[in-house]
Amino acid sequence: MDWSPVLITFKLALITTLALFVVGVPLAYWLSYGRFKMKPAVEALVTMPLVLPPSVLGFYLLVAFGPKYFLGNFLNEYLNINLLFTFEGLIVASMIYSLPFMVQPIQSALENLPKSLKESATLFGKSNFTTLIKVLLPNIKASVLTSLVLTFTHTVGEFGVVLMIGGSIPGETKLASIAIYEEVEAMNYGAAHTYSFILFAISFTILLLVYSLNKKAIKVI
Image 1 (cartoon, helix red, strand yellow):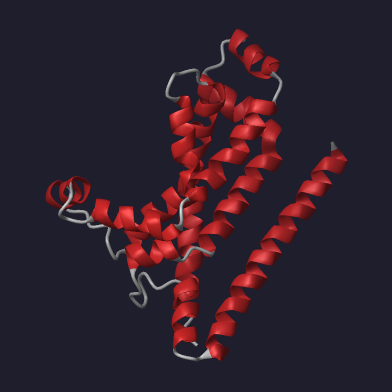
Image 2 (spheres, helix red, strand yellow):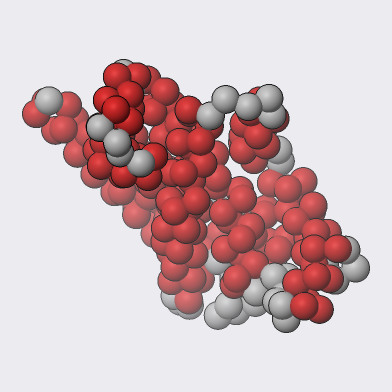
């Protein structure tokens, strides 16, 4: 059995989760407390990956990253960056596809916090960054953990988007989900079962651990 698709899958999931945490937390804070006319449009864009078929999102990313269009041409010509059929392209595509799984639980938790928490921190001269890191996030640990786990497990299960952007290059962009599809096409059900069971077992274990930790945290509170 070739273990590289499994290793690449979890490498992608880990990098995507960490990158989205850095991007998603400030975005969730901005959407929670920001007051601007385009807020509904921004929230709709953030949520779109939840309702769009993966193939649709993958197709538009494929077009956008292509050398014939502005973004892809700019990246190729001026930054010497190619996102099509590369691991880096998988990271960008996965971040876009998993964005709502990081942002929405944190945004919802922040909006449900007492307004007095943020107001008190502001009265004591705390910056928005300090307030977010030292006051708000510690009070929504369960939601932050849920966001991290949902993002990680969702990335592990990606298929349509990553197939469109990365293809199936062994050792580089061939993920476990793609390997399962190819093994089924080749009627090699034994290998497909092995890949599937590994993803199922690890995802179930992670979710079980998170639910157990959340219940313990609630009991302590």
